Length: 192
Length: 164
Image 1 (spheres, chains in turn cyan, green):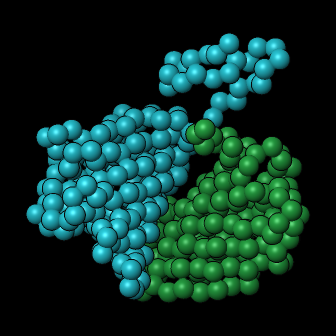
Image 2 (image 1 turned 45 degrees about the vertical axis):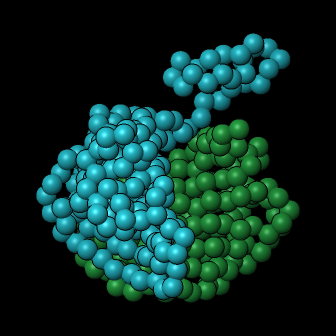
């Protein structure tokens, strides 16, 4: 007999006698946003539950900026103050560079394909936020993102610092210019 | 089948400790994943050491690192990995990192994928990606993390997951 999860809709084996015991996993989907045909100026996760240990965001994105690249920004709890810093390790297929920015108004996750880039190419990223609910810590974010545009592209390993001990309840993505193109998708996961 | 993640154990440091060890790790998973949010009360630019079965020997590695102003690649002959925050950096700021250990019970040498960042509201900070190798065919039954200088500060956390 199969059991259907009310949370995910997925079917699993039962824990009846003779069957394996089902262990709850530690990785759960919280929300997913996919941009529709009209595009979107921002992608935002609000009312993030405080019940997990860590957060992970996985996404693909493309901008509508009139350029080959757009720069993805991230803010936490809608804080627009100069409370962010970020550090950059970047490769472009030819060389690697390191750089840093302090006292900024957002975390900059850098280059994604935009309107002038080859059609249908999206950048991909994985973002980890450990101890997002810990009110004794400023929040350190790890970011790995990349895209290849068949002749150009970037690989970015970055870190971000939000100088606040507040628990994270809202995460907002936007661009330096333009909107998210259709099919851009970000999925937020909670990790117990 | 989708990847499944199961928490094996977690540790929150209540007062400074010289190391954190996960012992008696079950053998029933495919891979292991350890995530760490850590700071030390040490000085300089200490790294976080990561080793198996109490053995700090037979470790080698390759790294790619950014320092906030430049990028470089390096090799090592130790279990030290990414850089930790110390009292010299922005207060309340903890390094963040992940160790991924595929096939931890196999009878081959053990490769470990590591990525970690030390943040700071200033130019100097370190982002590191490393390939670590433990030249031992022993199954992994314990994992130890240790700062190369000082002790893990209060509120350091480490969470060990089994991956199926």
